[in-house]
Image (cartoon, rainbow, N blue to C red; front, side, top):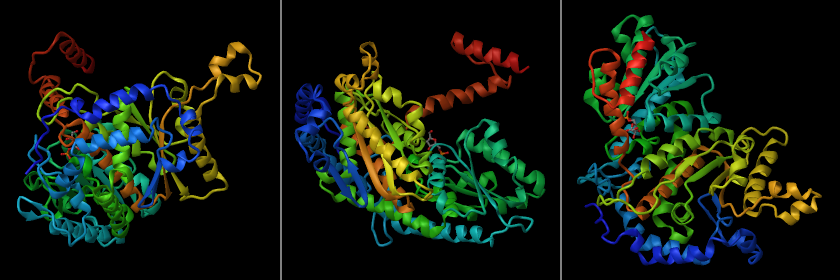
Length: 544
Ligand code: F6P
């Protein structure tokens, strides 16, 4: 049974109203004052769990803010919603589906029922098949059609069937099999495919066609092109079985495409695309880092699941981070969140989080279909440090927008080189310090700055941030980090009373594009507004 939707609107909750009043007092309180008034603030507002240290002291909060935010979570029924998700209730009400990415990393002996059937044995069956296949490819036992060893793996997919695999491959490259090449094709722009294959030999290339539905236009187009590219050299339809495998929930479409379902790795409709990197969608990750490391990744996810499920809210990392996001989005009017990983291997982490956060919480009606009268999911963005510092940090420090930041850093580098790592980490700490405390006019003047220059060199400070500090970027740590954000997104969605697990907002564009394709090919004439019609006819004229 899905959870009952609440009849009381969010803004009528006692905690919400108390937060509105509390915000009036808090909006002008400076972090300088909060730190000066409490020498232990750094310890008081930090939390360590399962190897992640979260320092959230540089947020514009007091004990009272936290108390009210936690009360808001309680009044919103967060505890019941967490239980409901983990239990396999159909909380994705608009698609009538359970939401069970947590079952993908559940231990073998766990029991999680969907429609009266325990799904855990199937999850482990697929994992075992993936492991056996990954081992064969990694060891060279799985050969291409002409008997050559597979050296290149190309994942073809888009959205959740691409962003997770790309991010995880980049993040865990240090652990990857270095004599193999891993590439990712997502865009329907032919350049993506052309550049990914330009220097590869089809005889040594394996394509993983990853698509939950196996109907997505971009992926199907790229898969078809991959087939033609491979067969052009390999010559024989039978080669498809050696060079193509599929990851999907749709066996019928997979075999229609010509891939033997014996070479298909399944998953289930209760895994959302953006929550699927630890399902069979992670096959490329597993081939890259090996089954043991993949297991460690899953173990990391699971540890965070257990923490989220069991820790009291005031010690619960995803709950705290989720509530802070609500605090800034709804009371301070912050429109974005910057995620700033100080680790080059996490360079695709912000892009991954964009789908996770924005496809999940970019909603404007509640579960019961009413228009919300508050802000929901903020815009997530970011770049790895320190590059961002020399690009957009100016705006975060001195611009007019309030941008809460998440800094992510690791104590031990994977590539220790001279003093690089200390330099890197000094920047993490310096940035959050500068954002919080800024530089007063008095401090600027003391540096013998002429009066006219003072306002330009003042840093207001009072710009909030979280810092996540972990020991080392391992597969396990990555699993914990991803699950941390997954559950933070869930927490936010519960507070906002929205469905974080559908994505109707991407449908309209897909349908319209399908109609327009036949017009671009000159096969049909469509009715459009004057702007769209002119653009279509110009395009047709220009392309000749
Ligand atoms: O962009 C919409 C979306 O449905 C995403 O949610 C999903 O991750 C992506 O398309 C890809 O879908 P599929 O895996 O079915 O090809």
